[in-house]
Image (cartoon, rainbow, N blue to C red; front, side, top):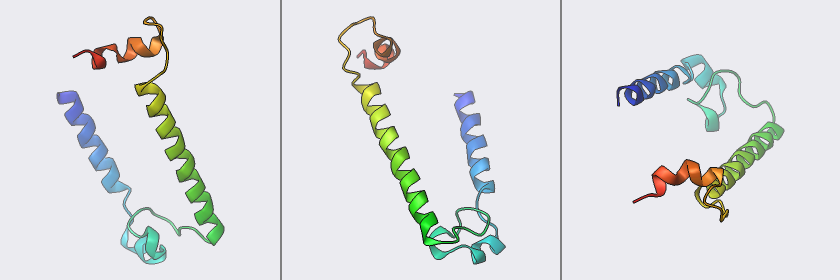
Length: 90
């Protein structure tokens, strides 16, 4: 429990430092204010690149969770079932 609390505390401090400062808020487009430092996307093409990257991440997250939760393997000795065994027992 103590380890989880320390990890949560460290994560919360790291996210607070990542927020944009006042100068960066003024220089960022309205969509991205308060998110990051820097000038932000310089053209519309960069928004498409960011959107494509988000779609790829969501796609891989969906399928990784899908195959982790329901692997489709029938063998009881399969590595996925060995990993999930403590969580599936009721």
